[in-house]
Length: 256
Image (tube, rainbow, N blue to C red):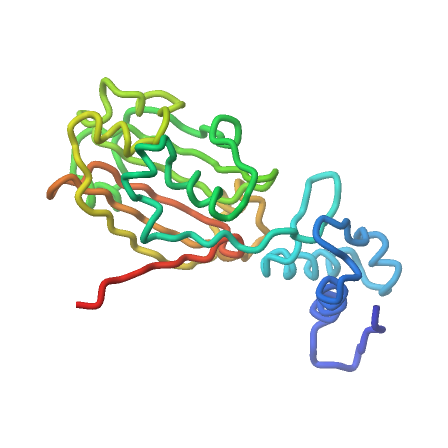
């Protein structure tokens, strides 16, 4: 590791991050390797613990490093998941019993089991927030909030809002929606999907999102709001927050 240049305009924590980043990229630390502890780096660089934490936070936000509570920081071993929006909602996947997130993980070669790697955070009937009601209309909805954990890391939070008359009498009302997920059950209930829209922004993670995705303060997230239609009716709105360093969004659009 290089000595710090305390006369430089570059912040000390960024210099420490530069050192660690160089070690990762040259292979001194490989995928899954544990990085030096905060105490090791404090002693090595002669800085305070907060400075080291800032350096780690920068590398985590870049997607090079992840943190495990009580164990330390490790080199991220996987490239971002390439989320193929043009294919992931294809009806053939639902017929094969696969929901969209399962398709993403399978195509990325990730170890993911939807029976064990989805944590249900909320499941209840209620009123949608105003910004969701603008899309799905008024009236009661089923609210389903989930956290998706892949290979030990939380990658995505998703809250679905489904009109109660669409969800009632189906497995959508249960924690386990069955093969093919929510959209398979919606279509079985007589609502054939005709189009899906997605609105995507990137923003700083709010405190609750940051905590659930185990992100450092100030880390970016992809905020994606998806609306599924059967004819002209919205039959689901899904409000999703994704670790911005863990996903690459890929869209194929027709040229008309």
